[in-house]
Length: 150
Image 1 (cartoon, rainbow, N blue to C red):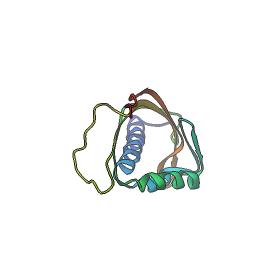
Image 2 (image 1 turned 180 degrees about the vertical axis):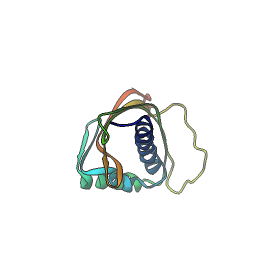
Image 3 (image 1 turned 120 degrees about the vertical axis):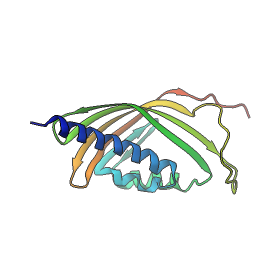
């Protein structure tokens, strides 16, 4: 039987995994996102499925190469349901602010009028010898910033 302290520690470790995911994307380390997944982990987004660490690493490496992109992923309303000591289901809201600068432009802060999107993440996490990892992450979008006319 899991004690209350064990449950709290597991929940906190799961929450830290979500925060680390956002930090890596936002601070130029997206190529290391795959390390937060189990070997056969799956990342699913709008019109995109990445199956396994190799596909996840390849796609996020291309994201990491976009050094002109400034983003902040805000993960909130985190609800964690433990399914035993080594499995968890997580629902969280995700707000993404993003701005693409011109090549060579390094100014900060960048302008923003609204988040790029607001959505949710549904995660299945597992405890491994290396700590908690994503077995599956599904990102869906509820609200999207209107496209600006060209």
